[in-house]
Image 1 (cartoon, rainbow, N blue to C red):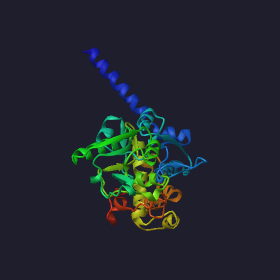
Image 2: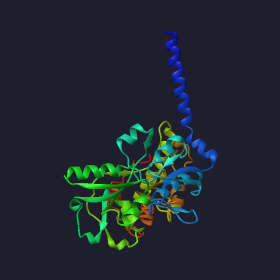
Image 3: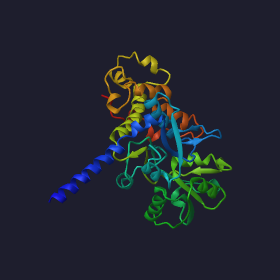
Image 4: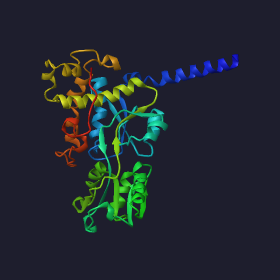
Length: 338
């Protein structure tokens, strides 16, 4: 009995030690002086470096928003390019503090990989792109087609489900990286290319003749894309989650990068809590009380980030659609800061 109690105590002590170790992410980040952000290897509009190593994109801006919240400096981020195959290992091992690179939130990923998804920064769905010369207007006309896709993704699984459900035959042509997949499609190795619809618009820009290709109307899956962090650190989980929520609340309240200083004078209780002129909501997550002000001042609200990276004013020209605020017919909705 004593031996059993001793082993239980040892086990509990080990568990507590592991929790304490994993619960120090924010402290480690502050000591290190920058956030290690797992990013895409290069997806236009979402995460891509230029030839000088300057990163831009919707996901990149969320990483920068975290740095703004923690350091009051959006440049204190190290971007780690990760393939679909390597992304989870990098987060699990501690190489990355947070993974923000078009990753679909699924039950198996949420429950078996030792990570937590913090929210959805882009609601997406899988689609197909084909050459206009094929003369088809629907994915239901792809019976017998060869389809290029990337290995190790939900895309591959959804593809199989869709063709089986519609009693159609297909040949999968799979590649390890997105670049290889796009190049294969562009060179004519397959009839169609499938990935998330946002990715189709981004990858089309890389094709030899982008205007020769169309994205078919069917969306065959739910792809809620969002950041993830390691299990066992509720404080860092809260920081990543609430930075995204603050950007959504700012858009809803009309607080922008241009007017945020003027909004510090606002008497609106919601704006006061958002910008830290009332309450101590920043302290509750280990940050200063002006954490959300820093985010909006340096990076902007969610709508501003969407528009400049992937919106209709960008090269991708994606409509807000499901990513509009809930007040405008979309799904983007944030809990209140109170």
